[in-house]
Length: 267
Image 1 (cartoon, rainbow, N blue to C red):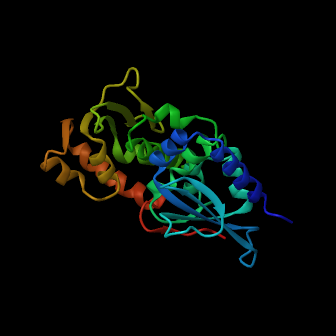
Image 2 (cartoon, rainbow, N blue to C red):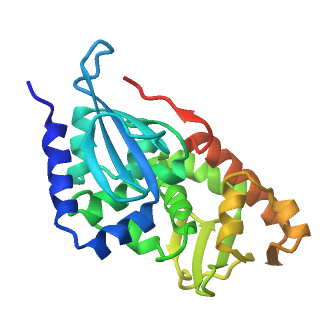
């Protein structure tokens, strides 16, 4: 039986070929990465594996076979899960969190898979991403990961996270263009929630102001909250002790969602 993924990659390539040069370069600029897909026909370890690649870093091409140069991200998944991602039955964020996709490379790059699918007319319909995301902010990817992480927890686990943090956070994040993104995270009431903009009727216990890049560095573990605060990269208003809890929560989330190192496929 043929791989269903063959049809998926053919359709993606046709959509890409139909792009005007400016549209293609727009996608390349947004993604800036080379993807290599190792697709296993079935879950059995002895099942046949085929490889495709998406070079979305220079010219923008999708072809069968290994990437022409070292890929920025390698994805390991079954044929059925590749189809599920392409038709929108599951988002990339949810697939990574539930171990339906294994990866070698940075999660930040893996999260751009949904961008490729959606730009080429496939993938999940806009939902949480558009509700939480801001164009031109890499922080949007991180916020979505935190949101998706909360979604895969049980109600009891979410309540436990809320009981551990006990705080309402307001994030004011600026990008290089000077635009501002605002998110509020309620980890004080019920099972917790995250929202683009402010949550009506709630007052933040702590407000954090920072640059988009500094937020990414904080979440990716390139800097810690205390150091960022001491060097002025994060400005804090309100209950400063909550900033330490945020640092701990981010580290816990990083470990659980596999932001560092390889995330092995369960194949």
